[in-house]
Length: 202
Image 1 (cartoon, rainbow, N blue to C red):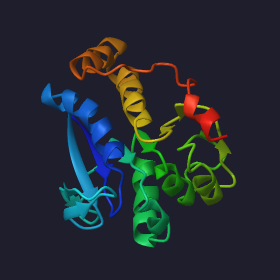
Image 2 (image 1 turned 45 degrees about the vertical axis):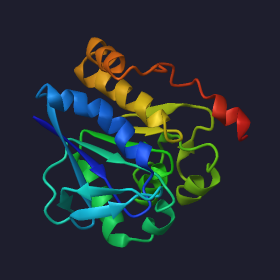
Image 3 (image 1 turned 30 degrees about the vertical axis):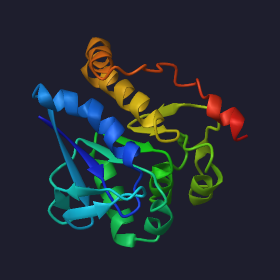
Image 4 (image 1 turned 180 degrees about the vertical axis):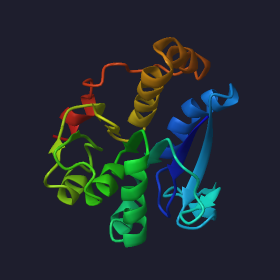
């Protein structure tokens, strides 16, 4: 059974985590995977919006991850300087089959050197900051999400749900992904290049 791990840190963006986990959680309900949360230390972690989430595992005792989800949020500006966390992301990304980021979470992947030479995208409103973390990355300004091998990066906040459904479709089948979108009553944007917000913030 695949394990999907969502990273938490102080100041993470709520929907970056729980939007994708709503989709992956539907797979977990059917026994196709399990979903866990992790942080530097197990326990409660405050989001950028205030509500706290609980990390099931700390970095030291986190089990093997088949898929890793790295959210954005204002906390990313601090965490790029957290060597322990960046090293963890780098090591686990090598082991994982899929590595996903939402919003400015791409900045953490970029700082870890994981996106060098790859195509990636991020939040268009905050585009300059992640770009500054990875000058060797082929940043795509207009995209809802971008897939490059094992790495899948998405634009701002709600785009993470579209990305999660695309990953589910790739790994578990388009019919499964569509069924989850219907259960969620979510209008899934399937075109990865459809990004109206890029024009707003260009």
